[in-house]
Image (cartoon, rainbow, N blue to C red; front, side, top):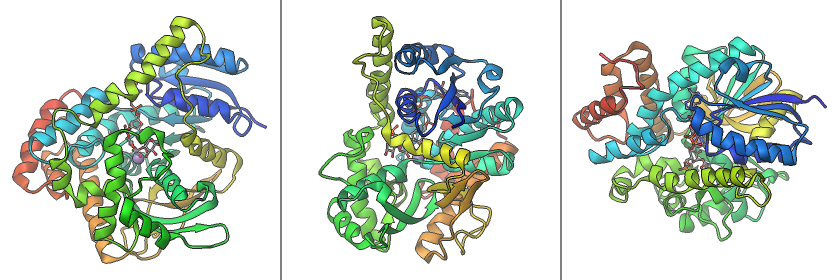
Length: 441
Ligand SMILES: NC(=O)c1ccc[n+]([C@@H]2O[C@H](COP(=O)([O-])OP(=O)(O)OC[C@H]3O[C@@H](n4cnc5c(N)ncnc54)[C@H](O)[C@@H]3O)[C@@H](O)[C@H]2O)c1
Ligand SMILES: O=P(O)(O)OC[C@H]1O[C@H](O[C@H]2[C@H](O)[C@@H](O)[C@@H](O)O[C@@H]2CO)[C@H](O)[C@@H](O)[C@@H]1O
Ligand SMILES: [Mn+2]
């Protein structure tokens, strides 16, 4: 079997160790000849790079491993780029979440004003790594899950329409794990129909391989418990704030009992509740900085100090094995069926062709083939149209340097009550992002 050369863009990511360990665990399905980490923060990446060098020498000595901040070294002779960059890192995530809360509106990583601010930063970083990839390895595929995936995907559509970039999200993967727990099945035994935007969608069918439909059974459970399950299947989300999010799915179902909701819809349908239950001085960014980020980097420093990864606190991110499934689909034309963020082009019959939608797709060596999801009802269609227009206005504002369009994007968001609040939030975000955003006028 061919051995592949992979670069992980955002090597300093808190997810890097778990994903690298998952890839080592999947070498039989996806053999690698070389793995390189790439980051634009040398100090941050070096901590994980040095620790992973020790681990790989112990667990996969045949694998050529390195880490670099040199784009030419990172992107030359690569088959795949797995991208999980965070423009502005956690310091800026904290500002994305706290600045809007100061104005009494949703502060969140990828949704509402926080997601818009993050999107305005991420486009620059994404274009940078896409251009490096195309310059140094023109045949390379980028499997991107840098956020905010909806705005990043729209920016790719407009600014790099021919780039070999696949935009994915693991929220549906995680929620399907929860659903499979609810009906005592394995996720791989289930096939779903789904439509929406990234972090803004609904399941319309959950069937097993025999064709049995479980949608109503799962809805009955979610109506009482949300997506909270007796056995915790999603270790990334044990923190109370995420447990609350999974529980809130019951209120999302209450307002739209037709389909099973993506948990992120709570920020759009219950913004007042979310603001009232947020701590403006300690948001999810703080939870992660004191949790996952501290845990991963402490584990890395312990490995470096001991000189061995034996009995380390690096944990495999087996949930992320869908990333290997995706790479295999491209490499071996496996026609894997996965939710992807793609240009609509009729997949949702009554929604704009040029919208970036999240739907089930068949993935093969030529890329992604969306599966038709038919027409969607008015309620979901109207919500999605409002949100996709916000996302499009953000990308236009980035390209044109338009203050007006970014103000319109914030004003149009279902998370913001008025143009006045939108302008006040925008002016604060501009100040906080002056190192990252394009000049607006
Ligand atoms: N799509 C999904 O479902 C999903 C799931 C989990 C995480 N994510 C995303 O993955 C990313 C990483 O998450 P994290 O919490 O580990 O972040 P992190 O801050 O720990 O790591 C991100 C890394 O990217 C680096 N970086 C930023 N801009 C860069 C650039 N232009 N070039 C190279 N490197 C750059 C940073 O220096 C940092 O080391 C985030 O965007 C996060 O939202 C997405
Ligand atoms: O608050 P965080 O940083 O812990 O998580 C934010 C991300 O949450 C989702 O990804 C989850 C996924 O849903 C879960 O099943 C598990 O795999 O962990 C992932 C990372 O926490 C969401 O899809 C991402 O876009 C968010 O960035
Ligand atoms: Mn996501």
